[in-house]
Every structure is written in structure tokens, then in C-alpha cells.
Length: 266
Image (cartoon, rainbow, N blue to C red):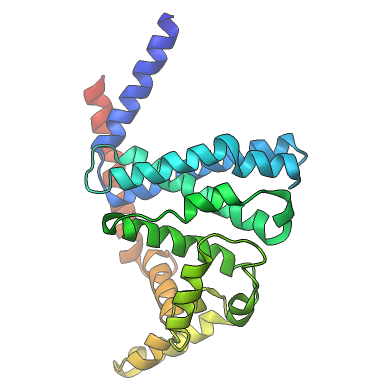
């Protein structure tokens, strides 16, 4: 009994420390860690069933307890969106939703007949008040970007028979695609990896490096690619020491805060 109490005290101390280290960088680290924990939950289920998507594994992966966890995660975000009373639970809820969406898409795309989708889709198709629409929108965009990656190009994605697959939130996707079909910078169209992206990024930045001119029209037409490479350049150690030092400085700040809180806890 005392051993269990000691364990609970240690967990509580760790939780208290994590709550006090309130930085975006630390939240990213925690989200990455939580996603790993959620992946372990799903991979353990798959392992029990020979790492195959069959009727039993798909039921356990997406229905029963897994679906109840999804409901709790979604509603926790809805109910606590405007306060910071427990950022750890918010991050864990986001991690679980992301991981669940991955397995939904992976199973639905090639193993649709191995699962009953009605109850699952009811959760994704929830109709809520205006206060929660942004959370739902972000979740849905992540869901569809996962589905985008199943295709070689945007045209395949756009013409795919999602009705036949009984995919959740399809009507919203259809309406959005119709509204944005002429928009070259639309998020789903920009989800595909194009050939030689590095060369395109170089061409977008070449004029600036040579004469200080920026072709904003070209950058806007390739914004997703430009943004991804720009961010990677900033945090990469391959370009300049300032970027490297900035990252090290932020990580050291997290480390120093952690050590301080641990010492205070002792």
C-alpha cells in the first residue's frame, strides 16, 4: 500500500513540474511524447491480432474502449478550450485524437469492410455550437490531410469515392473542395509532395539572395512548400549558428526550468 502511495506521489510531482514549465517548446515535446504513448496503445492491440487489420483487430482499434477514449478526448477539448486548468490533459487529448484519426484513415482506405462505421462517424459528425467550431475544423483538416497522403496527387484525392467508403464528414469536405477548387494555395492541394521541392525552394529565394528582390506571387503559389523549407532552414544546423543557438537556448531554458522545479519539489 505504501509503495503505491509513493508511486502516486512521484507521478503527482512530475505532473506538477510539467504544469509549471509553461512554454510552447515544452508543449511540443510533451505532445510528441504523448503521441508515442498513444501509438503504443494501438500497436499493442494490433500485435495481439498478428499485426493484421481483421474484424477483431479493427473492432478493438476503432470501437469499444478506443471509441470511448475518443469521445472523452474530444469533449475534454470542447469543455476546456478557454482555460488552462490542465494543459497536460489537453495535450494528451490532442495526441489521442491524432493517433485515432491515423488508424481510422489507414483502416478505412483499404480495409473498410472490416469495421462498422456508423457509431464512429456519429462522433466525427457531431453538430455543435459556434464556440466549438474551430476545434472541430482543425480536427477535420488533420483527418483529411491524413487521407490526402493515401493518393499520388490532388486529382486522385478529389475524385475518390468517399461515399462508397462511408467516410465521416464527407459532406463538409465536398462543400469545401467546391468552394476552393480554383484556389491554387488550398491546404489539401498543397498536401502533396512535388518532385524536387528543394530546387523549387532555391529558385524562390535565389532572387532575394542575389539582389534583395522577393517574388511574392511565386512564393504565394508555392506557399506550403516555401513555409516548410523556410521553417526547416530556421531550425536546421546546416545553415547558420544563430538558428542553432536559438534552438539550444530554448531547450536549455526548458532544462533549467525543469531542474529548478525538481529541486523545489525536493
